[in-house]
Image (tube, rainbow, N blue to C red; front, top):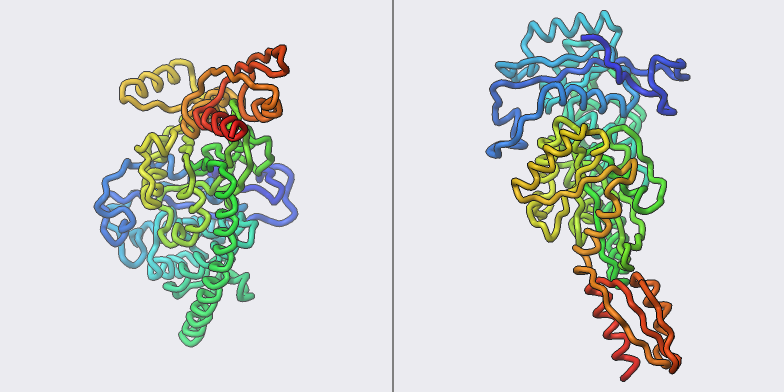
Length: 462
């Protein structure tokens, strides 16, 4: 297969193939194994749970995107049907030999296998291909290592990476070597060195867990302080590259990194947002989910994902224009379920269909008809153009604070100081000043605000 059109990016995000980057990109071969006969050992992450099959082409495009996210230049990519997974190499001997030739011809230094590999398989493939091999978990960890910006994010990535390395007799491509000052892609340590590495890894794991616990306690304190200020939390979740950061920026006016790149956001970002009828919320943008996300990676990011667990409302954002949108949604729902959140709970989760601007009118109508038929009520939006976002905010406010109603509030002269509060917390339609110095205010307000108005006026009377 010809080199991908999405062949890597340089440090400034420019596409490879344009102006030559200052540093040569690592040349990589991407292999997407499609197993026709799954064994439990090879697919234990989803054992016993039927799931929607993702198309091989979608997997290939996603793997290419993962490679581009760490500046790899894809020089060859291929979907490989595997009828009989080999314990030693996953792929058959003939196919391994074929890829060894491709590696030489294309002068490739790295192989990305879009499937979990056992330590033995990884080691044997590296030996046969004479190149460093990253499986799906390995490349996701590399991306996370680059994306982490906060202390907590860095600690979580390091912990997940060390746990991944602990059971392996091979070193990682860059991450662990950066930590220990190793050199080069190739050449494994001897047995004595392996044992020393394991001790070093375990010591680092213990130290990182202690540091992460300190950071988590600090986050818990911040969360406790937020709870004292009664602002509901709304968390945006979704498959990676669904447009979460773009929507976050649209709703908050922030400038969170939003690129057409997998895992552009890693660390959670929080912003305060005032909804149309006065309700104030805390909006949280979180790390994107992805299929076959390693269990230990989910565990390491538990502190970050607690923003989702603690949220009053979860917005499940879907890229409805993606051909694999149903399978992506299922992957997100599985991770939410692991966090104790039922995606089918309409009081807790709001499904939002993003990128409707990419659909043809006939496709939009077909999807709307499907939603009506199955009784679901997704909100259709375009985070880029802003289409549907006003309706989304109104629905969020209704979910958070109850239905909006139009009411008349009559203020006595001694209550006139409440006018500023009414303007800040409701949508004032009309104000009529009364002869006695009071005022009559016609406004729209949520159920929560209406209750608070009653309490404030009752307190003044008391």
